[in-house]
Structure formats: C-alpha cells, structure tokens
Image (cartoon, rainbow, N blue to C red; front, side, top):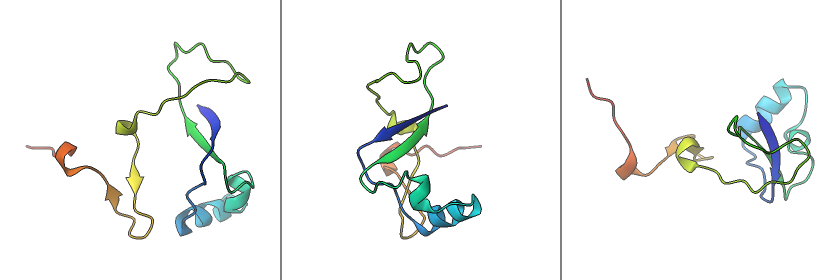
Length: 87
C-alpha cells in the first residue's frame, strides 16, 4: 500500500466525517489539515522501482476507481461501459 499526496481538496462528506470520528479523529485531521491537498491510498505493482521517500509520477487507472455522488450516495458511471452479469 502506498500513501501519496495530491493537489486537490479531500472529499468531505458526512460519511467521511463519521468514519473519522469512529477512528478517533476529525476528517480534517485525517486529511492532513490542509484543505487544498489530499492523501490518496493505492498500490503499485510489485515490480515497481519506486522506494519510500522518492518522488514519482503517478497515473490512476480510473476503471478501478469507484465514484459516488456526495448528495445521493449513488454510484457514478458511464452507462455505455457498465457490464451486467448474466446467468
């Protein structure tokens, strides 16, 4: 697992605030106290040459990311690429 910072505000929803409280912190503390930056958790390939403390350019494969509407909690996705299981 890797934790890295990005130049974007953290998603601050009621659920995030509740999870932070359950963890004994505030959402702002978990976000690092900086409204303009966020911490992202992900993973690199085991073959990666990146080591702790090094600077790396990171690309995110959004096909493996789940996006949700903060107002409704509903998943956001492109209908044309949605796959439905058939039996």
